[in-house]
Length: 433
Ligand SMILES: *Cc1c(COP(=O)(O)O)cnc(C)c1O
Image (cartoon, rainbow, N blue to C red; front, side, top):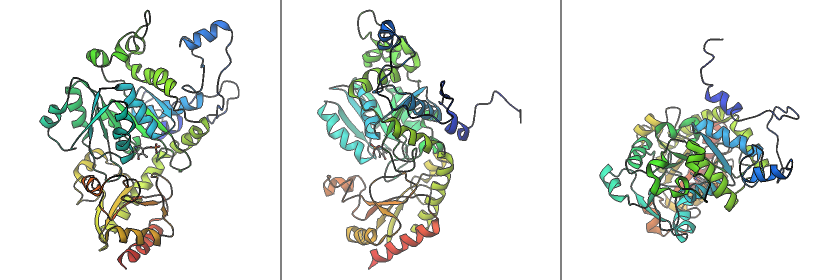
């Protein structure tokens, strides 16, 4: 089939091959685990060159390891970015991205429907560092958004498919709003993965991931990634991002002068990750790469199972509401049709009519589905949010975030739908008792 040799490779091919390099010495086909802290200098001058970034050889694994580099390039390729870096967790990826853009007394606008771990970091450690976060309703008008920008606003932050309630965000609209104000859009794309949604194609500038979830898919590692679309024109907003547009030391060019479209990623690698050190072990990255190789195949089954389970749950009297945008009656169904044509992800959140006590009986009756925190595993997982992830909030704050007393988050795995429904039925019968 020598039809079109210039055609770019398909997603399914790139998830297996993108970013990999055959080991020069051994010709190993699988990316090896380069379990080493550092790399021997050829001689005195080579050491100096490596520290100055003038050599293509590495210096230290804290911010530069060959196994990790393959994963960074592969995730960037799948997202359609210029480069990426893997770090120790999703939280570390978010913290690194924010720290690369903002410092004390800066301001960031965010959509309200964010993952609670992110909100906790925004009102916790990052606020103590002096960064001010302001939340805007996802569906606020253009004028409402425009009014919130300040001269010190450094980013708009959002999630494509928010964990746990799946309120699909109109990324193209938010990108336009952010760009009109001269700031980049940062998007957490953990839940759909680049197989279901590539927000860079809709205008996102920086994509962050918890690779602990579907990208790995096996539930055996913690990791994160930051991808730079390479599209934001930092130089056009030079006063806002001096860390990228001004010379760091006399005689040294700025990151933009030196790295062009790769400026932000270079800054992340050589300043943020170098200084903070959120390094992911190469062994974890090896396992991540094995997960990514089968991403499309797994995601197809994840969404198929999630859709079937959501449709079954919708008909059950014990369930007051199913939050899944693949359902026709879901308020986010239209946005899901537009942005998620291959499927609406595999988180299904259900609100049990019997509230907290029904949730207790439901979870304690499950035999196959694992009651635990985590999502994006081959196994189906369930958690009561109000007593765990959202437990530090007041009742009023929980309700404002849509976390009702009977809310259970299901992360639908790859087991047979028949077995999943049998276990859910067991739980719902107990919940109604
Ligand atoms: C889990 C999660 C994170 C945090 O990732 P960790 O790898 O657990 O640190 C960030 N964002 C979203 C949407 C998540 O689901």
